[in-house]
Image (cartoon, rainbow, N blue to C red):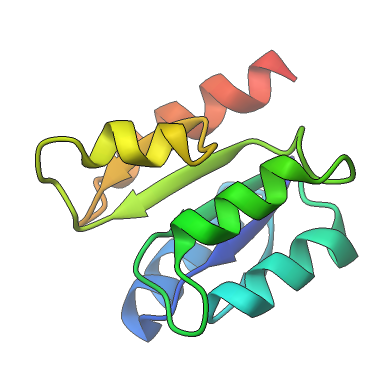
Length: 122
C-alpha cells in the first residue's frame, strides 16, 4: 500500500485517521503542524499527503503552495482536509495546489474513495 503523510494538529482526528489508514495497509507518517508537514514531505517522500488546512505555525494553504512550487515535491498528491465548508473553500484549496478536497468531520468511506482514486492514477 501507500506511504501517507498525515498533517493534522487535532489529536483525535490524527488518531482516528491514522488507525483506519494503517488498518487498510497504509504506512502513515504524522506531522502536527504545517512547518513539520512541509519538512516531512521532503524527508519521507510520501505517495500522498492528507493536509489539514487550519494548522498552527504554517496553514495548509501555504504548505500546499510551497510543496507544489518545489520540483522535489510538486508531484505528490495532496488532499485538503478542512472544516471550512464555506462557498469557495474547495476552490481555494485547489488553487493552492491541492489535488482533492474533503470536509470534516471526515467520512472515512468517502475519503478512502478519494485516496484510492488518486493512488490508482499513480
